[in-house]
Image (tube, rainbow, N blue to C red; front, side, top):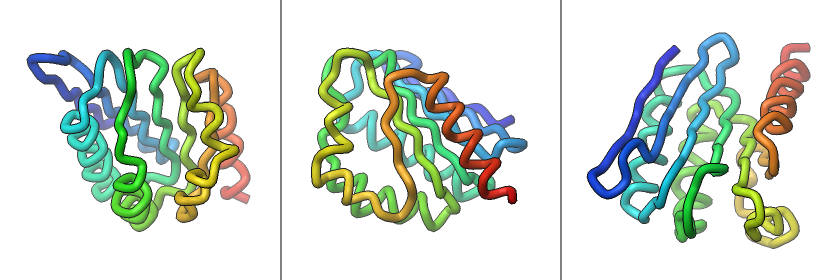
Length: 141
């Protein structure tokens, strides 16, 4: 297992990255208030791990975030997503904080910006993990 914890004075332990080699999965857990620079730093740290370890699945957990998160959807779609796909990511499970409007993401045209891999939005962490496990099982056959 590879684990990295990102911290800053204004937001201690804001991002935990944990890679599980047996599952070829990177889990990125965000907490607190995330500014744009912190979000970029976390996203780039995730890419660094993905480039060094085979990573088929990504679980992005936003359940413990406070306030708005990362306003650069275009950067994610145009820069980050192609790099993640090139590193081998095929499935992304995005867990949103309850009571947010993020669940409307799937119904919007912005969802079509991410065509390099399959992405699903979840309200519950357990459901996201179940979906990724099913994806791994499906590609193993």
